[in-house]
Image 1: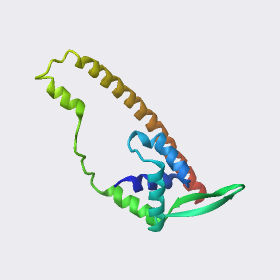
Image 2: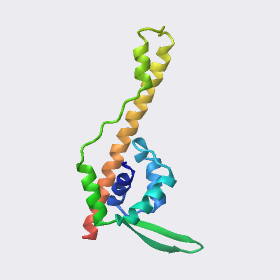
Image 3: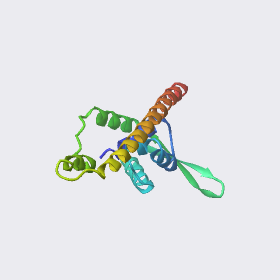
Image 4: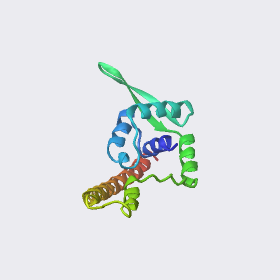
Length: 151
């Protein structure tokens, strides 16, 4: 399961609260990995129990303490080990491709609307990936600056 490693990746760029990490899943990470806030918090608890992250409580006036998570050396090693492992190719179940295949034996006049919709969705997805690339580059630059300032 990749979710803990996605969380470790976020924490390798900066310390963050569970809320901050969940916001990342709503924006940039959400283009390639979906996770609810419950899943993120559950994984943070597991990562803390396995000494891959630490949690520092930051008092807040009139609110519960804020939990700020940081990746540990053990977490960095686990992330590096996971990153070096070969990728398992997912099973493909593509309804659109199956319908393209069925065009051989079905009247396909109405399928052109579905084809146009799929084309539009693909263009939107490409635009999202371009924005993600910009965001990822900025995260990388930020993490380098952060590491240099902490050195």
